[in-house]
Image (tube, rainbow, N blue to C red):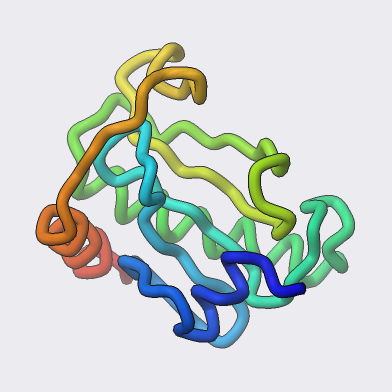
Length: 131
């Protein structure tokens, strides 16, 4: 059965895309810890990040770096926090979260509630900063 991320890749579920190429996709998390919280995924559906083949694994991190640079340019923060948890969706993914301190990347915190318009504005801002 296809993961929710595979359904996003196929366009079956809408998302607020930040960046995309033939192998990877970055889109805003719909339950963000901070404005700009982005998920970076391979288009190839593999459950565990460390089960990705070497080329896909390396490419994913290089793609995530490009997204993180754009996030840092566009979202007010001290750093871009990075987390790989891998329990919530059976599809390898990287969380990029604009943070001001270590507790800003605590996944037990209440999530932000943003409207579709605000998500769209944030996604366009980040996408515009991509090189």
